[in-house]
Amino acid sequence: MRILRGLASYPPELRPCVAALGVFDGIHLAHSRLIETAVERARALRVPSVVCTFHPDPASVLRPERAPVPIAPLEDNLERMAGIGADAALVIPFTLDFSRIEAEDFVERVLVETLGAQEVVVGFNHTFGHNARGTAALLTELASKLGFVARVLPPLQVRGQTVSSSAIREALREGDAARAAELLGHPYAIAGVIARGAGRGRTLGFPTANVRPDRPLALAAGVYIARATWDGGAANAVVNVGYRPTFGENEYWVEAYLLDFSGDLYDRTLRLAFLDRIRPEMKFPGVEQLKRQVTRDIEAARARFSGGTFG
Image (cartoon, rainbow, N blue to C red; front, side):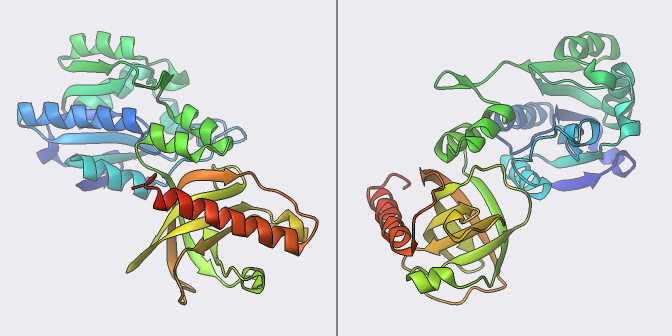
């Protein structure tokens, strides 16, 4: 998949195209369906499929004090777009100046003149243009005037809940990693370099990998079952996310205990895919109580993995 950054980088050989339009944070199930639809339509028309997205998230520019933590970094999103089969991704830098473009101008200048879109695929609740005045209804109206087809996809539901980035963020805030994975279609994941810590895990008998996350976490504090991967290896893991209240610390930590693994992973990048939460973060009266609980956490994780819950 070709990755194009900025409108000026868009090449003439990708015109005409079928465009999938959206922010696409995390590439959840509804995003995947939308991009798949664009890919299928492009193949039917024998033109390229282009995902048109924005970075950073518009909310972080327009309402930085209230902007949500991203579900996934841009590069992860692009990798998933490529996996779905898109021919290209156009990443438009979202700035205050860009946000002032009127909805009609965005459609005419970006979708028609720059992309040469024959069809544009959007979700039912997608908005665009100044003050988010552009809606799916307006896009459909403009499409008939400007000579392209607007395909508006209806909501996608999983067990009665509409799949959306906000629903996934809510699940993550509640520590419901399993529900988030169900709506995403894949586990919520982070990556970071393994750093040397205070060595408390080893002292307790449970040596852990201390991960410096590559970005702020959208996940609630707690103890999780996860799948850990690194260059050349993988292991099941029990991961503590939080502030380690038993030791009176106020720094946010991600500590992974890798099941059935021994070795040195310092300074390597570890990726953690969160499958489910065992329990919320707890403060214990002392070290012995903490050790007993960690033992129970590990036993619970082993039971889940051996029971085939996660394949």
